[in-house]
Length: 235
Image (cartoon, rainbow, N blue to C red; front, side, top):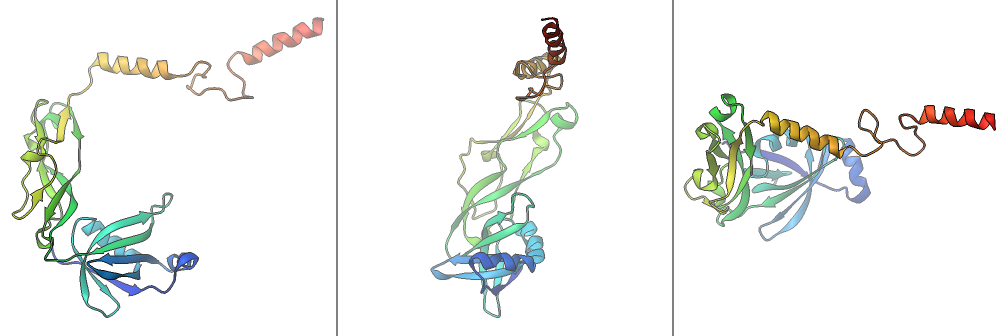
């Protein structure tokens, strides 16, 4: 993977004024670590979005602030708006290329499982990343997991089954399950599931399964009210 350079500028807006920064298409960020002072920076939102889709949290990038020297960094944390999913803030961690680091590496599932496309099973992923320790130069962007070996429902893939590059140490438990294929549900299981859902509908719910709220008429209430009204007229 080619080195990816992230361009940044020194940030001069802080606190509530950071909102002004975001309206101009910039993202506030900070870089720290490697026994250096923290640096407040700003990034172009569109450019960083493209870069983050490539590096994620596990691939090295080169950060260039203003006209200064390039620094090797990892994207340590990304805060997003819970409604719009837009990036609000980024934390970068400086990397010492001579010291080993621990980080999570994503698993990329490749191939096709015969138990899925021939036997209509469902792929169950127990984990989608593993922790490793390595020198930054050896850090892989991802680790491949070939699911084509899952040709029946008894087969499983564990951490011990995956291969990592030389110089990379897996820190996850070797007997930890990565994935397997669950068989399709039988008609009896589907019927039992429907019954459980039916039992879960609260008493007094309407036909759509929605419980009548306070002040809302329940089925039969209208007829009951009309009868009571007639009885009162007779009194």
